[in-house]
Length: 77
Image 1 (spheres, rainbow, N blue to C red):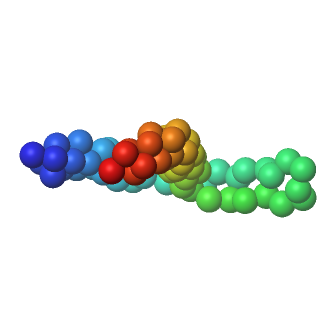
Image 2: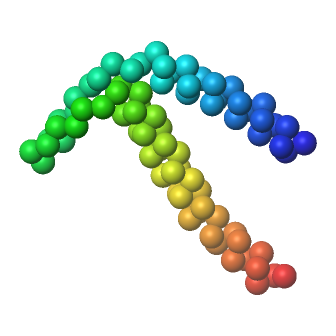
């Protein structure tokens, strides 16, 4: 059941990301303000990397928040 839900959520998200990437291939330059560099890449790369960074940050905060509960369960077992 869990795999089915994963596929039902993951497949449309992957398709939406692919459509977004194909539709937004125009080059954009990002100025890295305190540094003297400018990065030029497709727009979708900036957006999808920001989404990935947000996902990883949220996952790490959720993992850190569950440490106390996992420790409590481990000591009770």
